[in-house]
Every structure is written in C-alpha cells, then in structure tokens.
Image (cartoon, rainbow, N blue to C red; front, top):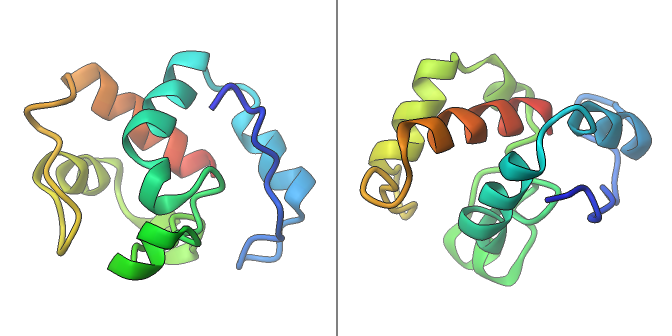
Length: 108
C-alpha cells in the first residue's frame, strides 16, 4: 500500500480519514505491498471490507475496535490459519510477512 490509497471514510472509532491515513504513514512499503497483494481484494485498501469480494464473503472490517483489541498473536494466527471464508496464508507468507501484516492491520 505505498499509501497511495487514501482512506475514504472515518473509522468506526471516530478517527478521521486523515488521522487513519497518518497511522499507516510510518509503516514500510513492504508492509503495504504485502497487504495489497494478499488482503486488499477482500478487505479493501482501507481495511473496511467494502469490496465486491469482501461483501460477497462478509469480510471483517479491519478498522473496528474489536480487531484493534485483538492481540498480535491472535491476528497472526488468523492470517496463518484462516478464519471462516478467509483462506490460510501459512504456505504463502513468511513469518516476517505475517508480522508485517499484523502491524499494518493494527495501524489501519
């Protein structure tokens, strides 16, 4: 996500789009790229799950307080093992990439 994608709406926790975008600015281009490649199709560039595929699969909104409260180890386990219709990424992503995604999701 080299942060070319601008967050369009305020987060459910009341953050403005600008504030939400600022949260991801300190993250690496690698983190953004990994998210775009493996997550954005369903969860969207902004993490809200408001994409055609995301709506079809009822993808979780990654910007919610519920997701923010999850431990990093729980998020990593979901990425590795999948959840519901979400596929497992344990064979597609390295441990370092999973850790990057966790940081990225926490910053959405």
